[in-house]
Length: 213
Image (cartoon, rainbow, N blue to C red):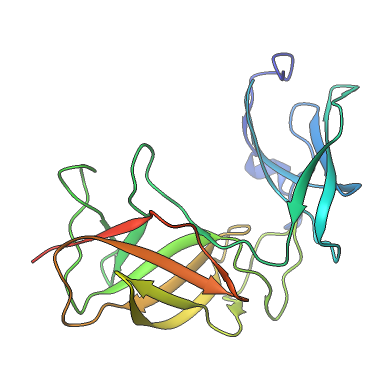
């Protein structure tokens, strides 16, 4: 329970010092495998964080430190990659934008303010957990360059392989990846499941983008 953690919220600009992300917000911090994580958001019931750089894999201990009080340790799985696409709340649709105008893509009848993708569109998929880049960027720092995931992840839409022209960390952010793909010219309209594979690990099933006529 984080009810005594203050007002909560995300890190402020002044809490990012020389590009280093904060390891605590309002007296709340987290260690993963004994190493400090980097805290982005806290509320009375939730903590969003970036896991620290670590060469260990498998089950690791996680402890929440809340203004002098420590939680019981619990375990989490730490892996080199754990690809996942961001989704709109209460929806199966991935967060996707179209190039070059950056219009958000989804089913407009389900997600107001979005439009359907069209065959042949160039799209950006937004996600996390796609692994190391070249050059490598350690956890806990704001990304300053367009550091590429190598090799480029494989992407399928509706079970069809699509061309992924790039996959990189997003400058000015932490742990936010963007993958640019081009849809084939022939695609069936409606929801199409999108999966990303990196290092032999596939992103979760049931995440879609929406194809129009």
